[in-house]
Image (tube, rainbow, N blue to C red; front, top):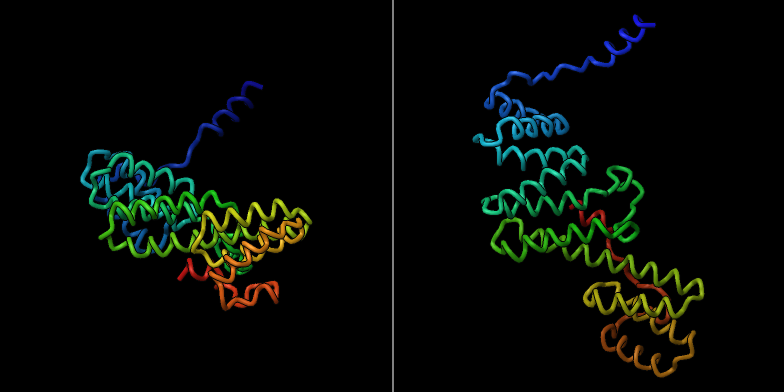
Length: 259
């Protein structure tokens, strides 16, 4: 029994050898960049992470941390990418790369796009949990407001607009669900939320339509009149009141996001 126990313990104590043991700072940085260039994102993330950990005050420490975040993001390792970019932002508020760091944080926060299958099925942001989208929006907002001259500002604004439109679509989906289930008050409340919080989103057209329909079902004739007036004022060419649906659906959100 003693011999067997020793054999088991001996087997469990062995660990794989780290191929980077003994590498100098320059060699580790060179190898990490080579993996990045080759598209081996999982390994380049690990190399850059090791570089920052072993040489925290070295010449490549700051760059390694942001590179690690990028590599992990490209490798679809969202949790590790988030830790790396959040650490960079916390430690290097004076960095000339801070605008890019926030931009990358926005991309990482919205990395739950389901990869290939998300594109294959055409699932949209409006059909998913909006928490990641709100976090991404905040990161892009920082780029647009704190760094208006950044080369990432224009794209950040485009992505913010996309996120707002998508979140509005998500709330419209909920309002539509309530209406079809006969929960007209809940439908009206959710439609009002879209109108209030996303006043420039394309979904506002359907929000006003659902508001009118819900008020009609509830017998609130005065509110129907008011909502109809507002609808015609803002969408004079719409035929949704006759057809029951928007004439022209917006492009698939994942197509816009991955442009």
